[in-house]
Every structure is written in structure tokens, then in C-alpha cells.
Amino acid sequence: MDPNPTLDQLQIFLAVADSGSFSAASRQLNRSQSVVSYMIGNLETQLDVSLFERTGARPPKLTEAGRAMLADARRIVADLQVMQARAKSMKQGLEAEVSVAISVMVPTEAMVAVLRQFRDVFPSVSLRLDVGELGSIMDLVSTGRSIVGIGGALLQQDDTLTAERIGHNFMLPVAAPEHPLALLQRPLTLADVREEVQLVVTDASDVTAGRDFNVLSYKTWRLSDIATKHHLIRGGLGWGGLPASVIRDDIASGRLVRLDLDAYENGNYSIYAIRKVANPPGPAVTWLIEAFRQQMSACPRELPSAITEITEPFVRTTAAA
Image (tube, one colour):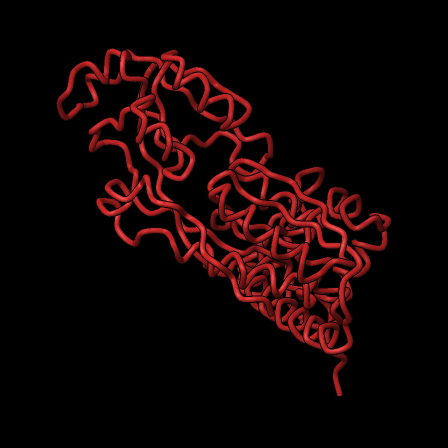
């Protein structure tokens, strides 16, 4: 019987394909380059196909067969990780510590309500909390610094991660009442906002490097976090989008005005629970994900409803598991 490719060989194959070179894969896997090359050669012999074109000093390039095998390798590795994860979860007890990354798009009231109940239900479990912007949630989970992330969808393909939709929020374009755009008191066009300063949060991670979301103005101020953006918009220094839950009190009190700007894509922003496939949730993390799902279900389902109900509380009592 012909020998089957091993999980180690497939993981090395994926590492070379994703990193673009044997040397980069060796650094990523902490293996010598000669071992990486040897394992790929053995895999090619077993499959009886060439996976990479090797031309002098140029980086290896996937052959047509290599591209076809790549999809199979990803599926096989993912299936094996699911199997390992299931076995791990069957013998796993209560976690000693839970590390969670939470997006700024998750309403503060919902986060506080969940963590208050978490403290009461799991008094012996330590908690490490990171609050992040954009791609930093995915980055924290993929690097293992956080066991679970509560935030936006996966921004790039990563077969080692799984994302489960648990709720949503809304992004709304706003400005201070004395801002020139607010003073127009009419539906705004792109021409209206092009020359006004737009405040934009720049992601600290590499996940969204070079990508902008809903940036409509020619003039932008780049900020490191959404809290600073919130304060500067309230101070009249520019306009921009903020989560509906963050600006609820500002809209109610008149400190901020929602801008009627069709060009701004301010619809439903889905919230996901993101975790590694190979790192199944223990009892505490499983409870945490379900608690956030119940809290996020209190958000209005439609954007017009979200606007009219924006002054209503955003906290739901979560049943202890």
C-alpha cells in the first residue's frame, strides 16, 4: 500500500504556499530550510506530482497541480483540526483563565452585563481582556493571545479560524451640531463631504493594511482608536462614523447629530465570535459566547428602528448556565 501524506507534510506545504518561500516557511514553523525542502520533496514523490516550480533564485511558484492540491490540503488539515479539537473538548475541564478580545463595536453596556455575570458564575476563572479596533480582534485570536474574539467578520481567509455570527450593531455618520455639515440640515451628497475633514480610525494590526472603509472625504485625520475619534467629533473637529451604541446618549442630548448621507454605508454591522478551530472553547468560554449572543439579540433589527430606539437601554438579563 502506498504511504499516505502526513499531517506534518500538509502543514509544511500550506506554510510554503502561504508564505511564498521555503525560507519564510522554515522561519514560521521554526524548522530548518533543508527539512522543509525534504518534506516537500517527499510529498511530491508520494503524490507523484510537482507542487512547486523551482527556477534558480526566484521564489517557488505553485504549479497547476499544486494549486489543485492546495485546496485538498486545506480541507484535510481543517478536518483533522476539528477532530483534534473535539477530542480535546471531551476531556477539557473548567479553564483557569479566559482571554477575550472584544471589538469597540460591541456595546459597552452589553460587555459590562456579560462580564458581571461571568464573575458571578465563574468566580475561580481569571479574565484577561483586550478591547480592539477592526483587524486587531482577528490578530489577537490568530496569534493565540486571546482564546475568543467578539467582533467583526474574518477580514481575510484563514482556515485555522472559525467565526460564528452572534449579533449586530450599526455604524452611523455623525457630526457636532455646529459642524458645517450638520448646519446644512438636508440630505448630503458626496460633494458636500469631500472637502470636510473625516476622522478615520487606523487599524494597529496588519490585517487591514492598505484598506479603507467608508472613507469619503479627501481630507482625513488618522486616529489610533475610536474613543479619541468620538471625542474629536463631539469637539467639532471633523465628521465620521461611530457605533450606534456609543453615540446613543449624544444623539439623545443633542451633542451629536446624525448626518443624512446615502453614500455612507451605515447598515447592519455583524458581530461574530471568532476562535481557533484547533482550540475548542471550554465551559467558561462557551458560556461567554452564549451570553454575548443573548445580549446582542437586544439590538434593533432594522436601521430605522435603531435610530428611533437609540435612546433605549441595550442590556438584557442573561440566564446563568
